[in-house]
Image: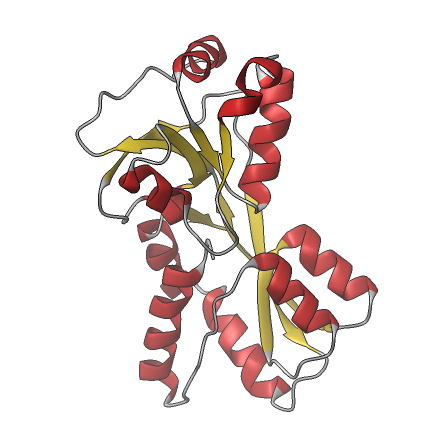
Length: 221
């Protein structure tokens, strides 16, 4: 889901350039990986790099049909109008976490990282009753906007354009984790040449401004 808006914009631009129609289906990463692994006939799959690695090991993607698309960091957000707490250092982040009443996180790569980070900051025991995991496919920002959590963590790309929230900023140095999102041609595809053409556009300089616009950094080929 972290790449859904990015992919919609890239697909629209590729359609304009190529004349080919591209249909993107955005679902939770666990569901996408399962469906690709089950051999569902997608032409391309876009997931965190470690999930693509597992699909590759299972023979579900083409050996020469993979690119690393973008690097994505984690940010913290609060409800629109709320005070933005200090998170510029690991120590300040720890104090903010201990002061928060309810803290939201995701089921994806960012959620796994922030839970490990909370362990490292030695705040899990104090916060255990205050942690709220967003359901699969539901942005953490939605929980923040509804007032169900006070602060929340997710990929910046999933927070920056959600109404009702304010992005406080990225996790501080030493606490940040960058997820690499990769795209690959599925071995089940019946249009591998067209799929590789799409991925070539994703990796081209023309795609870089779009990737940045959605809160990620392009990965140079």
